Length: 79
Image (cartoon, rainbow, N blue to C red; front, side, top):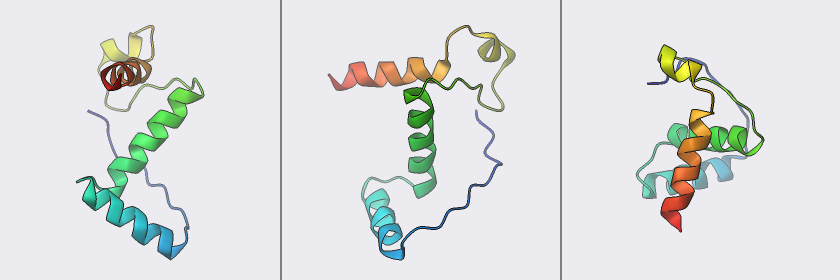
């Protein structure tokens, strides 16, 4: 499991924030869950590799990006 201890603060338009929070609620997700997924997708899209904090030594030593594998699997399920 990832450690979720780093904080990201950003300023956005209040109307966009409210719309985002409403949409997240409709999808039964927290805004934090959605933002974390957006960041993972962005990193994968640009080929940035990372090892999630709290990952096991085996996951850290894996030659392929674990997140890329997860994303590819999700794409296959959508087809």
